[in-house]
Amino acid sequence: MTKGTELLMGNPKKAMIGMMVPVIVAMTFQSLNSVINSVWVTGLGPDALAAVGIVFPLFIIILSVGNGIGVGASQTVAMYIGMKDKKGADRAAAQALVMTILGGIAVAIILVAFLNPLLTFMGGDTIFDVCYAYAFPIVLFAPVMMLSALFSNLLRAEGAAKKSMAIQIFAATLNLIIDPFLIYKPFGLGFGLGISGAAYGTVIAMFASMLVGLYWFKKKDGTFLTLTLKKFEFDSVICKQIFKVGIPASLEMMIVSLVAIIMNNILLWAGGSDAVAVYANSWRIINILMIPLMSTGSAMIPVCAAAFGAKRFDRVRETYRFTLKLVLVIMLILSVITFFTAEYMVTIISYTEETIHLRGDMTRLMRVACFFLPFASWGFTASALFQSLTLGTYSLVCTLIRNLMQLPLCVYFFTVGGSLDYIWWGIAAGQITGSVVAGIWGEFVLRHFMKRADKYHPRKDSSS
Image 1: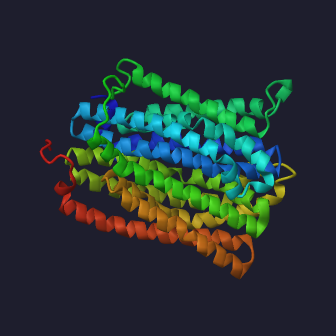
Image 2: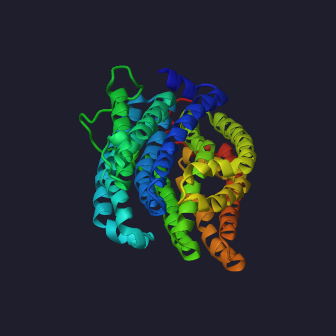
Image 3: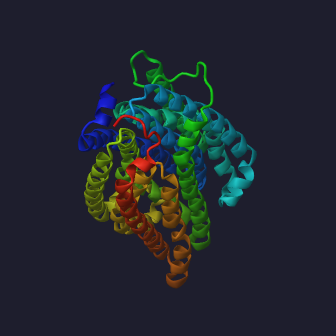
């Protein structure tokens, strides 16, 4: 046992705090990678800023495959740790590593082959060259990004959230330092690659963080898991367990990416490239505000899965209740602060003469987000519960409802009101409805699970 696994198997409240705080910090720095790109790219003008927003769904597709495998591996590894089966945990980690390598190569080949039509479909035809320059490095090095995400998930699976946090901090800091030298030539130094420099900055930062994660797994006594491919053989049982959570998790992120692509086209129809720039770049800040929600899943899945594996079903319920109350309070506080400081928040992505006219729409979108963020606490926490209990398809259905519902609402509201503000309220209506549905469903599932928990356990003869 390591300090991480002892934390994972200990008091649920202490485990959630011990896991959640490093994950929040890690995801904050991870999100900063996207915001940093927007900040530096803003100096290249509105077209470059819009290109970052248009290409962003491709970045999400890459991460969705990697993170899906990572989430599935996190749940499976933590469950085996709860069963006190280290060999099973090591086998699960090895299966996930091979899946990620093969999946990353496949994703890179497919996206590079279809990059031209994809960018056109995503609304990048009017600024195609700019979009292509930014997209190509990102899709080419998809395996690097996916492996970096996997190592972070495996570290969290064994309770080593602080090491996972260090990886993300290192990547974001490196990206912050090298981006201006890749994009521009400050003080006559650098490469001056323009928008493609921002993409290469992201790739280099992710590659460096991947190496740090690999170092920890290979260092003697560095981690609880022993990550090796010696004598590797595919294990159909473990693969099925990983896929049961991982495939729905991947599809969830792909749905978010698809919705973003459709939203880009709706916004191009409603307000041109300026509307896309407003939505895509304001959403980066909203994503930072949603970090407590997203970190809930990353922290709660291994904690609940370990309790599930140990047959401590009372701890599953206690973790869910505690997390829901905690994240709701956090989101209410953040929403109030954001409502009154939104204009200052968007200044960092609208500081040039070419983009300052976008600031008003960005501010209004941020303030509308304050109304649906507290509701999202319920939906995101319920989804994390589903995934921790291997009910990944339930989480997928909730994501479908929350994201797909907003599309027709946005179009309808815009046709009624005729301004971008009505589109922002369409987003809010869809997010609120989907989150409430997920939360209510989560309550029913939890009650049913507590009554029939043994039936769901993958190994009925394991020790309690």
